[in-house]
Length: 273
Image 1 (cartoon, rainbow, N blue to C red):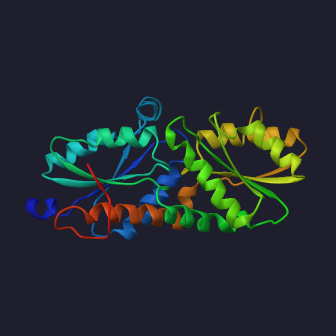
Image 2: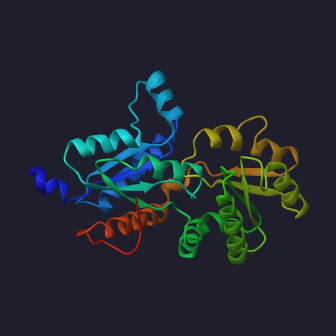
Image 3: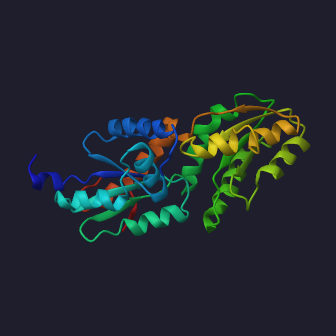
């Protein structure tokens, strides 16, 4: 391909937080799926957590490039535009750091929004979670996200409201980071409602360290806290990144970001950096 032709076909950079666990398999699954959805695009990956990138380089000799490194490479190859698709769930601190890092002097970037932005996004995610929530009518379902002290923490309350509107009182949303609906409060709520069994579901793209330690750990975890209250626990061991509908929602956000690049119409609406 001639250089001029290549630069007219903006690549898509999938930007994830990163993980030091076996949950990297989730990213590989997403990558394979996205490449089938965008067969005419170069798909690149970047990771926003410098701590995770440094750990993987120092301990596993694994290259996990930062966004600026990827954009530098694209600029060196003559690209003038790129889509940067956030793989965050909400527009929190990590997303806005991503937007700042995407401000590159040589490559203009169109930003694909995180998973939960519009009301329709919430509805689609709830639909994707329906088979898990409806698996057993006699059990409570507790979705556990990371949490944030950013104003976007309200996304969790919005999701809980819409989940209860759809499925009734059996669904709860909590977060690992204390501040809103933490572990102990939810254990008491589920116990008070009379449930003898709970299904713990990671409200996270990957079932990484937070899942392995905070949700499923043998001690001081969500599982151990429910079991100490006499409630049986079933664990969903995969993150949301394995749900085809969730990947497709990120695809629609990337397509919207492509649409605002001059001459590259693809979908509707997006943010341009």
